[in-house]
Image (cartoon, rainbow, N blue to C red; front, top):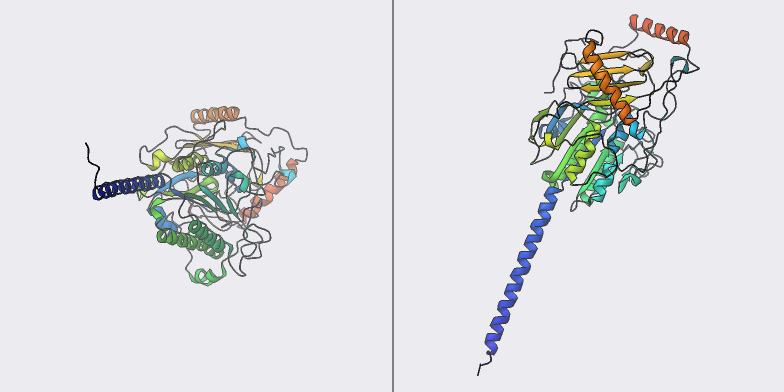
Length: 519
């Protein structure tokens, strides 16, 4: 006969089982927390700071001798700086469409700001390709992909691609409309711009967007987020931040930069970046946040200078399309790294997706490459990869400025290719070709098209093959309003002004031997 266990023994067994169950729950919870931490580390937050009309040398780390950007400079020093980073277009709307879609202009067909003809009709030999002014909502943006992967997404500031950015993959929109500039300037009232209706009187819109960014980060601190902070700055109108004017009026002018209003606008951006970084530190998010910094096109010619680069916003010379760009990613990107690999705006789509662990969309063309192999120092170059630009339209000249192919237009219809050190321009009105070796001639002063016909032909063949492959439209129809005599007279008048010294020239000591590398 087996004895029944005593009451004391029953209690001891029960206590042991409870202890084992408690231990199991604790271990399970610990594993779950570890798993969440691992997932969080693999899914970093993303802060994408995207400026408007911000030039290649408009930060301190890129060499400005007047503008002040200590917070951006610090972030750049903690990540990888790219010296040869390009926008996909020389002005706002097409550059942004390429960035969001990951596609070159012939795919989404946004070629210019608006679809109307630009410049004097009498000076345009061809009928431009109008394209569209709205990003096709069927195109899946990188924001869609991040949103689908579990990220809370926000856009704050300039949108410019439709009336409302929310259908394009964003959960939050502050200030984004179809407008290309700040809503009624940098000071309120801001009309019906979403989220800016109640901006306090006298508050600078750049400061408001930075504060909205801080609020978004705080509200989403426990889950993955992606913030597209697309400042209106430094797009015209050049509304100085009033509190900073006296400081820059008293500051000695630099040889490169000296524009007071522009300096205040840039400092407002940088101060906001410092405020955001302080909040990331405070919340313990710094080590799990990737920061990217970029601009949509070259600087505004009348107010800044990209020396030694030729050109500015609206031209397809280097000053119009080469941009400041860096990526800070703690634990992945080594601080102080630099890359001279040519990269371009469409590369950011696959880069952002890979950072977030998001899939690229199926059955949608993508023209870029992920930058992660370079960011992780797994490779230094993509090899012989060509970069392309296609602009089948016109963009009129500034009133009294040079550094463009002719005095009447910053750009006429053209296609561009860069491959290695070589860059070829092709202009459709006259078949003009310009070939430059950017290693020897970063200023694009010496056209080698005739003296190096072999290289010219090789690049032109690749450019034509690309246009055929991507179905790029080329303007061929003659413009019935064109007046060759009127055009010649206008060019002569502009040339006369230039000879008389009435045209303000940027970078007086620009020359074919000038060269600069980021410090």
